[in-house]
Length: 338
Image 1: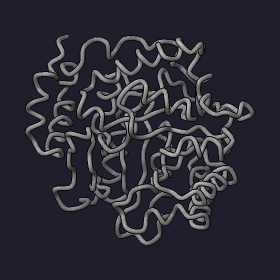
Image 2: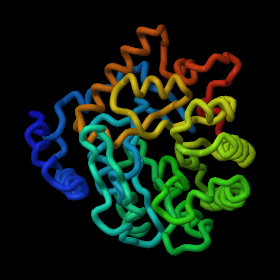
Image 3: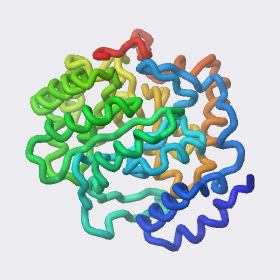
């Protein structure tokens, strides 16, 4: 199948960032994704990239970050690009428009994007309906948020957990966004403890042992990082999704699987995060500038890097950049509250 993305890319660059995103979503919904990448996207993953976490078998560690497929419209189409897993959302219980436009800006020279979306979401009803009709193949996570006008965050997150637990392969409680007033206050120790205990109960009440992760911000102080690590271990959360990889790996003593989000535009970027302690990595921005073929490039080169350093599997490389060899390797057996 010919890869037509290089021909489409100049057209997308001329559109505002959010309009270009919507156009690609509609194209994927129409089944045109097969024209955006060559056959490499569906080639079998190198066995060296496979690992098992939370009882889930990941064929490779490269995932799509939340923010692109906010409403579960194209998770299957994105998986065909070669992602090892896809995270949809952020999803709020009730529909909300988010911040006023324009709210997404490309920084061409820096190959970066400024995002001020503000949790725009079609709401849980629409997302749950789509998830209930999706193919069971592939790993799909759901990133959960709270509505802007909700005063009790526990209520919103608990609703998301109860309704999505039976349809998602894992769930993420997103308390990292700077675009929802007061959200990051939930990262404080007392607030986080008050949040996570009822959310873990909500998961238990759902009857599904779906892994529950917490997404935290990249600009936390040293004390805040230590508090979050302590709460995560004490409450029995299954893992953080974080850019603070090295510190969180050290602070949790390698006992919680970590997902490295952001800053992944090459195999060397992914490898650095894995050696810092990430079991999995996620990207989104790099796709805007490099196109979907990037996923296959990263996987092939990452496998080469692992072999060159003498690793027999990606699991052996996780956290290998740390000086201390006493830190335990996180595996699926470290689930603390299944």
